[in-house]
Amino acid sequence: MRAIGHAAVRRDSDQRQTGVVPVLPDVVIPVEGAARLTAFTASDAAAIATAVTDSEIRRWLPLPNPYSVSLAEEWSTKTTEAIRVSGTGLVRCIRVDDAVAGCIDVKRIDWRARTTEIGYWLAAPHRGHGHASRAVEALGRWLLIEQSFERVELRIATENRSSAAVAERAGFSFEGTARNAGFTDAGRVDLEIWSRITGE
Image (cartoon, helix red, strand yellow):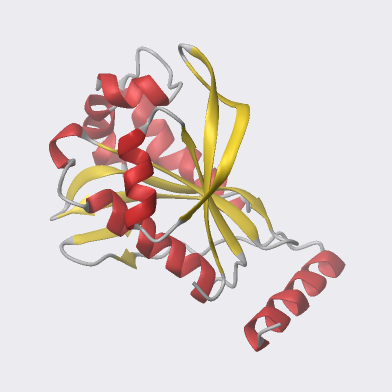
């Protein structure tokens, strides 16, 4: 095991003994080009509410409908920070030239195994420019190198070919299909499993 992996094991052991819940830091993560991954703010609420009315996002994500600006404001401030401080994940805005281009999040964290999953969506005007693949690559690299995770997964509905293309461009490897493992507003879906592991 790498030295950094030993350090992660020691931290986890210390945290179990003290009862301290590990959390991911509230940081800005740089992305190649004009994008960066930042916290959401209340001023992003209108852009979020507009973005998630898009039919392509709603096709794959079972979000509340309607999705009001007030709901987006609560989510972008209280909910996202509660997720972070609970140690269960991290939500970042994909911000391009200060505009809300999309959302990317870390979820399903297993601190002991050092594994996690990334999810993401892009607002319609920002698609087709490589923002999603660069954001996924940057966040995956940050988790594996700077946060000592050993495995990062993407779970993608089998018919969502644009998202699978993002995974491939971001350097993730296709592993197989988990049957009936996800759901959308239209019902259950099979999920492709893509991953990057330490050293890749």
